[in-house]
Length: 280
Ligand SMILES: [Zn+2]
Image 1 (cartoon, rainbow, N blue to C red):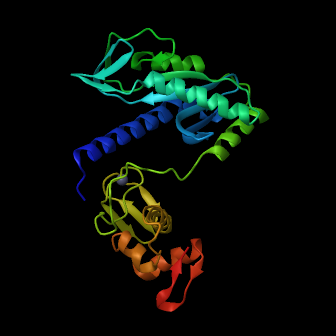
Image 2 (cartoon, rainbow, N blue to C red):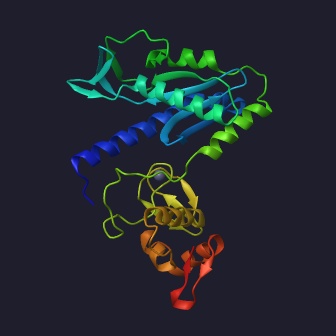
Image 3 (cartoon, helix red, strand yellow):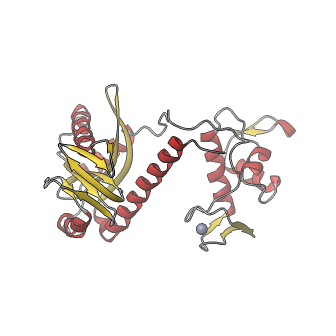
């Protein structure tokens, strides 16, 4: 399917944001056993929905991060941010302040009054901000490693109240966001096939019980890959029935409808009979 210039831009922004979060994951992995990391939370305070990029719960402090994977030249001028040469972007500091305020209110309503330190992190190594403000909440790429060293948790363990905080936020997270900006699509207009979980390539071959990525060598069990694609199908086409034929087609006709059926029978409830069988 073809995307409009606006949709392409949205997609690129989304991909860049996602890559930024993956990069942050990598940087914090050395001390992952001593903290709780929550990402991409969609929360609601009264009727206001807001997104929280990254929350880090450590034994000493809790952190709220807005991670921006901006690349290239930007300028800060009169409390505004511009992507050079001239397009103004949403002020990321305002986004951070808004998320912090709404998160605080939401947690207070649930009886939790723990404070969060908030930081705006520019994570891309090729990011330049002209007239960069010396703001205590902004971490620039060159400051990132020393910042992470500073906040890396001490050896004292997480306690019950830390887990309660993480559990509360996970429960409040809305897993089914309304995506108003999703481009129009149909089953026929989308490319079929299983893509690699690691590198997103579609060069996947079925070898016995495994799917093998010819590009990066990643291996995934056939049943896991089919289940992943069936769930994706369900999310994308809520009004289409999950059948062995529809999922076989959605997976790019890999394996056989019979093998697909075996996977579906294991993970979904069976409805209908014989040729009319479908899964929910
Ligand atoms: Zn791959």
